[in-house]
Amino acid sequence: MSESFKLFRLQQIDSELDKSFLRIKEIDRLLADDQQVRSSQLILDHAKKEQFEAEKRLRLAEQNVKEQRLKIERSQAALYGGKVTNPKELQDLQQESESLKKYLSSIEDQQLEAMLEMDEAEANFSEASEAHAATELQVAEQKDQLSVEKSELLLDIERQQNERNAASANIVPTEMGIYETLRKQKNGIAVARVLEKTCGACGSTLSAAVYSAAQVPSTITRCSTCGRILYTG
Image (cartoon, rainbow, N blue to C red):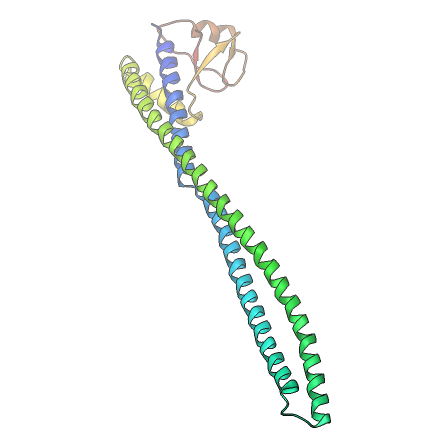
């Protein structure tokens, strides 16, 4: 087994580990993210506030109508009760009664408008409640799936780390040191496969001497351009 192959195999395992750790990091971010639920909660809170305000306006309108009707009843009682006989006073009472009835019509319109606003606010609150419940359920299901995926990834990582330990046991310390240093310097990719006499990592064409040296199994050869270890396959 060539030295470059050992390092290439280790590179494959490390790349799998990198992907697993990166995905777990992303899963942890998604599990901690409650933006969807918070957004739907804000919409629900706003709808609830609008419903409360609409209900308050409706109660006020109903109270105004009730009070106005009592005023009309008292005016009518004074007008037709027989206690007032003075023509001028009767005329004044008649005018007052007409004025009260006109104002009643106006505030009854306000009451009707308040009732329509209340109906709309209740519908909006009901819709927001259903949407919020659906969002909570959807997010909970997504997080359950992510938790399952994370558990599976942790098992994969354990297996991959065991494979890594076995693979690295056959690599001499000096070459392992070069490999680890390159991993840090080259964004996790220390070994590049040679593809048609070019470096699979940086794409540089290899000289005849470098390509020939890379095929020697007992030594490791590095790309003269990017410095990565070459594996000819």
